[in-house]
Image 1 (cartoon, rainbow, N blue to C red):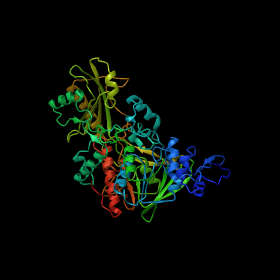
Image 2: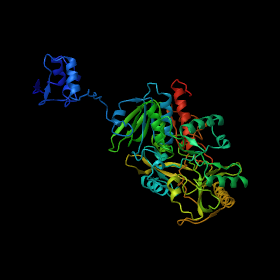
Image 3: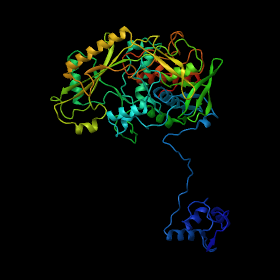
Image 4: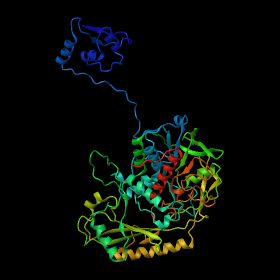
Length: 562
């Protein structure tokens, strides 16, 4: 028989109970009604006659070609590719650790805490001043080649306010993942003689290098088997460059197997956020501008954060980790009233010399493959040189299209040491206030006579390397064969919140804790006291992981090893 449901309160569940049937049995007989909680007002519902048994009902349903309908399992909608938390909700919590900045340092601290505290009831939060731009390293996007990647970075980044005229090449990028979205993924270690100048035992830093290399998928085999790299390496070795080696890259080149995910070849901080998220949940807010560090009686208490609509929130935290950048971390500390003598001082970078040349490909068996070579610094050579081809990161489409003209391009990148000096610094500019009420910075930077001598040595060194490998330096696209990039153009800035044992010459101790302030840490490029002549991203991540381990110990636990 059939009944007509006229009352909106007479749900399917009520009808089932009244007729001594299960909801599943009613759904079998009425496949047009799939949701037991659905308002079925105005619909007819078939009910079996009193003489029909349960088996007869199942038989009728089977005869009609029906099968049981899968129950609808309620799920909380996720409106983004990464879970986000509103600032208003974060303001209701007190965090065990709150991280400011999602770049290399912040992402590393977050990953390590989540890995170590995956079963602990600790509340972890991280905020990012910028928005979401891309969900991976830009080199993982097949729509971007090197030219388009540079152009896209130029569009997203902005000139650093206060950089002119002494630091004209500097730019800032505020985005989820920070500058790791566009970095070159070069991952050499600092040399032991440079690490010896740090307040940390060299062996301990080398141990953390190992952890960082593992989580970043660092490999020296990216160009393995490429005749372009193999032939030039042999030429270098035979001409006295005994330490020349394949350039290590943060690139996951392991073939996919056993269901492992290998979607992002080149590592960015997004990779670290993903690893953290798969260990345990955390709160993440974007478009969240930290404007002030709150502290009382020598202990941090939280952070004042402002949303784009200028609504202010107070995020309470027992521990705060600053990973906002070499410029924004000291700016935040200075505006919050911290008076450390070294704060903002010892701004350091490297001098950056570029050269372009051509080389005969007569001896290169096809396929040539990419060129990725590093010639490291030596005690008497205060610079390092990298050699790459035109397709160092984009070999797969270019190899097919590259014309057989008999020659190809070789790029040289020289990184020269710069002395950390107190007078190289950033200060607050009270005459220029940004839209959040925070003074802009003013950069004071110059090269010493020693630094300029390094540029001269590096220039001559690149010329010798080119000659010894059969490369002819040329002008290209209006750029001279060899030139010094504007100061600040190389994003290897560091030192403005340097670690050290002496509060007069450092801002934080060897674990990144701000001198005299409990619970306040720095974990980004600004913490590096000396960077030598190599890319420092690997070093920043290794140091940030060490800082995270210290925070874990301060919470009464010991970091676990695998």
